[in-house]
Length: 335
Image (cartoon, rainbow, N blue to C red; front, side, top):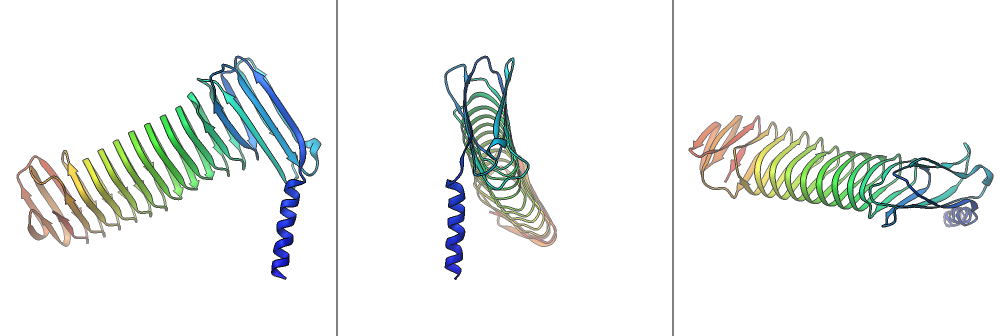
């Protein structure tokens, strides 16, 4: 019986999908366009760069009911092109796809309710995307982009310029970013690799991992674990309830956790740095072995550095690079 009901449900779904007829279909070429405004609603939107100075548009809408209520609204006002997807207030199912071929130097503002947004090969672009419950994919872009995805994943590959994004629930996956990144994700995994420039990441309850980064690096997290590996620069890492791991890093450090541990392997210091935790432990394996001085404090735990061990307070060394370690109940070890 359960198999029969499952089969019927699948049949109804695929039947309604394939039974949809074309409600509206449009094509157009627009000249002199510098700005594009798109309300794609439920539709998938694909934006691709090309060498022509014109904007090419194709779009199709499908539904299995009330077809007259679906259509594209297209309006050109001087150098601005507006494209809106119109649908009825009450609906059962629908599908749509829009494709834009965009020239170099375009300014594009996009909003969708549930559709996916893909942008590829855009140059000197100024992009503003609000996707309320759809995924956003950016590939081979050069320029600036602001992405707001309350519910949806963000995927970026090969971006040059300024990237800013905020995600409430979704996965963030960024590979090869040259420029400035300002990334926020309240609930979801964050994976970032191959960054050259200034990077700020505001994480939430999901794990945060950054690999191969060079520049000013600031990572924040509330309850997720944070890992930074193969990185160099000015490094600021702050976590409330998650562990902090550093691997093969080089630079100046300001690392803070509340209940999480701080663990470092192959950590090299170029200037004075600090490591702070309350309930967590600190354990750092340093590649820098000379020119060091330590000022370590803890309420009631052992502190170890330069093969010396002491409780509550340890000051040792005469180097120019000062390592300041502060913990409440956690122990500290530097070796």
